[in-house]
Image (cartoon, rainbow, N blue to C red; front, side, top):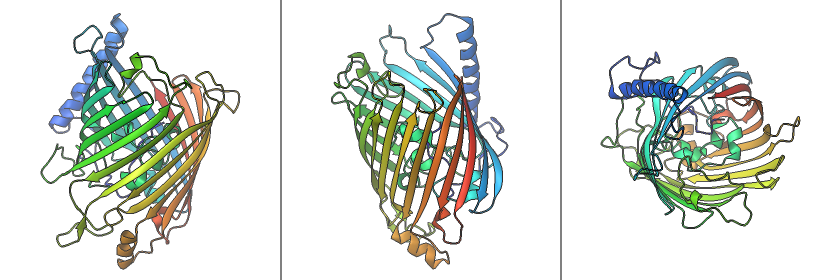
Length: 440
């Protein structure tokens, strides 16, 4: 399932191309999307028609379709359908080349349908595939993994949540807070380069020793696709976002020993999935922002926007790659400067069981809680405008993922949102979602 931020209520839902067409105007971004689709189709045909190395050019497709019902509370009851299509193309330099270790990747996404957040009215985002309708470039980057050195460089349009502030067990759940913690996800002018709006970035990663990863990134302070539909890279006034994360990982080999080859890492690395992870991260924007809860007008007091987070995941039962039944727990904590960010602190946790129901090794079931606490500056300013803010919004989630086919999963999901949008005037909301994901 998609484990990214989703479109939160504060984010603009308008698209620069409301019809969803690819080349309604001949902008460079839309022409690049069209060229990508043509290359993707060509790669699929070539893979079927030849015996070329499948690791040189790798096309893939995924589609998430979701029928959702706001059962009670929130803004209003209702039913919506949301769809998310990803077309991905990965190019890998052959191992015989002098440039081995280099790869490129492009991901074009299309969002269509209704917006569950409009019915629920919550702040954290009950639906992590919701976003501005239309087609856009989600990622477009070039990466080089230095052979045997444990160093990886990546540059381009980059989803920060693909590597930062990420817990794999939390990916079962559909609430956006289990992708990027909300105090970070709602920071900046258009968010910190996460789904559905990503930005240009330069990322460096190093593995000083087995089981340890240090990552740092410098990101454009505004997304590549702007809320008004235009596209820009490092426009004057954007500023920049700097972030760093240090992770300690334990993989299935309990001794901590890893074969030499997996020192080549980064995106799409051959490393086995970890069983335990502890990570800490910090972030800061170069520009100053208006006080939380106030319009960004001249004369409004401004201050830095910065924060930190700590995340962890532990395999409680079923260690080893051959374990049929597994039980994992995870926890999240985040804090952000309350002067310029709506959410000052966040706490989330969950438990996920795999292979325990109906004798299916791949099925998962889990329960989680996400609580985002509003900062004092934001509460004071919105209260002065006539609203009745509460201290926090808390969401409980119960989810079950069934592997119906090798290429198809089905996931019913139930969420209960206490104080949607941290607004005392909204009743607690109950939401049911039925999501399918097809991958090819």
